[in-house]
Length: 370
Image 1: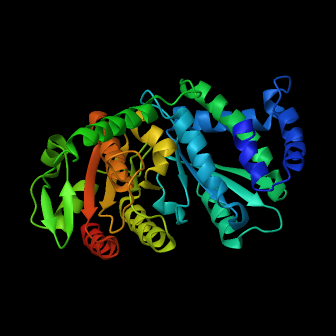
Image 2 (image 1 turned 135 degrees about the vertical axis):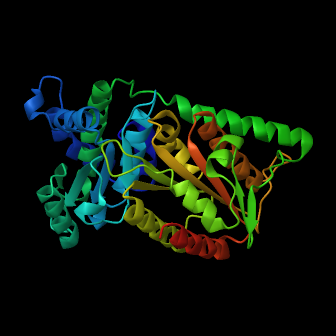
Image 3 (image 1 turned 180 degrees about the vertical axis):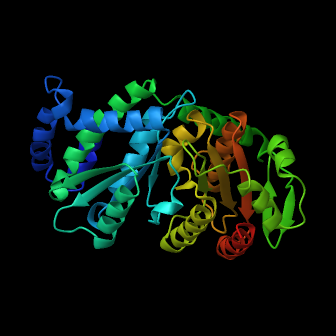
């Protein structure tokens, strides 16, 4: 974000780039190579995350940020997942997960609380105090004002590099993001020739919803007569509540709007409450370039539910025989294929009508998690 790649859009948006960079400079000096680790804020945070993950199994970095800087969580998700999730290791970042009481969290959590001075949320502050009292590690960071977000960019970049060194990976590449891109490219190239995507046969259909699974996952799920039965079997594969426990990720290739976000966030809450597993929510294809790296290259501790839908309105891609809807479908298919190749527990549910389908899915999920 502090490179030319990030600063040019900031300038185009009308932000005072000079002020931003001047605010960052004190953190840059504080994180310098000549500053002892005990006094270096980036190194301190990185050591805490790295040691928590490798020695204590607390690899689910749960990000809590004041409402005024809540969107910082999405950027931190990308930084941590894309940098550390590879070779079967890594940190699994969680942003925008609804807060819960301590007994609903497993021993695989590391909490990072970023509080905006003068604009803190009392419920967040109280929740962090309760978590600390219950023995959960909480890293507290005070952000002076909105301009000091730049300092957090720098602090967390240093911290991620340090944590990566402790975990034993190279934080400066993203090999598994490219794997999904290659799958998508192959599918769209074939579409140019055949004018169709590869056919798929659902393992189950019900009320405008269809479930898809590869042979291995289908065999593990077994045969059921209801959507609830399949979801119960799928979430039954979640092992949580202990050190380095599983997490559940909802991978939604649907429009990212307030209604859909609320519906899927409610599902996250139910999943967390009933399984005690950490939960992630990503809208595709965006998440492929952030948390998607950790999902495919990180530890095999994820249980994935991919959600796709029909597109009532579509637009052709200029110069090609396919549409944007076809590209999205190819991205979802390529994403799922890589997850399956990596031995992940994955299931896809396709909604003919997205809004009605989400209501149907929520009801089935409630029954499955009882």
